[in-house]
Length: 285
Image (cartoon, rainbow, N blue to C red; front, side, top):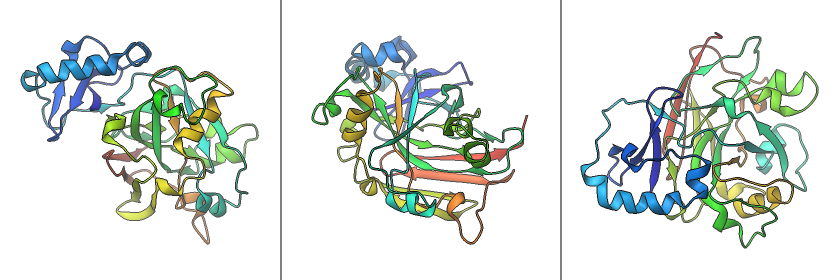
C-alpha cells in the first residue's frame, strides 16, 4: 500500500495512492496515520478496508495538496555521514558507529510545500534521504528482528542550515530543525512495495541541474543495522521516522566553493519506488 495524507496544513486527512496512481480519500477508514494507528494493527485493518472500499472511495482532485504521509511522530531520528562519499566531501572520518542527531517534529511538512528560509540563514543546503517509518515499538531489537518493526519507507529531504549547524557550537539539531526543513513523501510505501530497500536509486536536482545521484546500496549502515542500533539507546515508537543519511553532492561539498540555496531556487528529488517531491525556496517570514 501507499499511504498519503492530504488537505490544508495541520488539517490533513488520510488517503491512499492506488496502483494506477489514483489518489483516494480514506477518511471513512476512521483513523489518521499516527502512533495509535501504526501500533494498533492499523496497516492490516487499512488493507482490509481498501480491498472492500477503494473502488468507490472519493477520488482526490488533481492538484490537491499532499501533507506528510504520517501524522506528527514522537521523533525524527537522523543519521549523519552514512555514505562514504558524503563523509569524504565534508572532510569527516568514516564513522565506526552510526552518527545520530534529532530533527524537530515541527519541521515536518508535505512533499511539495515551500522551503521557508529561516531568519538569519546564510547556508541552506539539501540532502535526499531514505526515511524509514517504525511500525511497532522497538527496544533492544536485533538486526534479525528489525524488519518486523518497519511500517514502510518514504522520500525525505533533510534540509540543513550549515552555519547554524556547524558555526554556532553545540549539536547539529539547531541547523536541521527549522520549520519546513523536513518535507516527507509523497507517500509512505509499505514493505511489500519496497522489497529491497538497499537497492534504490536516488537523485536530487537544483534548478534542473543534477546535484546528487546515488543508491541506497552505498549506505555504510543498512536499515536493519540502524533500527537495531537506535533501539539500544531509545525506544522507537510506532510512527517514528528514521532518516538514513545522504550521499555526496550537497552544497557544502561543492568545490572550489560551497554553493547554497537562494530564494526562488527549485529543488526536486526522488527515490526509486518512493516517488518524487519538489520544493521552492521562499523568503523568511
